[in-house]
Length: 118
Length: 113
Image (tube, rainbow over all chains, first blue to last red; front, side, top):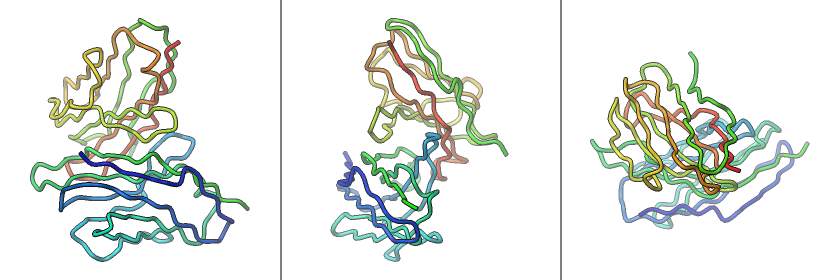
């Protein structure tokens, strides 16, 4: 079974600055996907960024980028130029990539509450 | 178009009662998932539907929990003889196919008193 660990229960950052959220995972699989989701008070889980394990290049989406270290099983999220709207709970998640039998069964970490201060 | 819709938004029930939680996925999405999120935790997988059939129900905690998707669209999560430990936010998600990104609804917060 896979496990996902987020060791930072809470983080805070000043508006316009950069913050990094940590995530480690444990798996015996070689092919998989990793995700960061954002959950604002509305409770809806919003996909921030996705990384495929076979791709060595780190994924980026505008102000969001990841540092994927496969050997270390580490998957951190960097948010640049933080905005007040980034305040939310952030979850790291793992999904197996079993080729033709894959589906969206995600294993989530415990979450990190991020607060952006003006 | 409209996103994933879950009703009710909040549900309070007494211990021992039966509840139904409804999920309307995005039109055309064949895959549908239920997750449960306890307070201060990440969501945990409950069940996955591909079309009308439950392809993976390994996350259902016990036989008090049951889910259906009779026409391959709307799904209902049913909980019998509710217990206080069932209190959580129940999230539904859908996707175009098995490996497409999941689109989540806003969840139903269930409180069992």
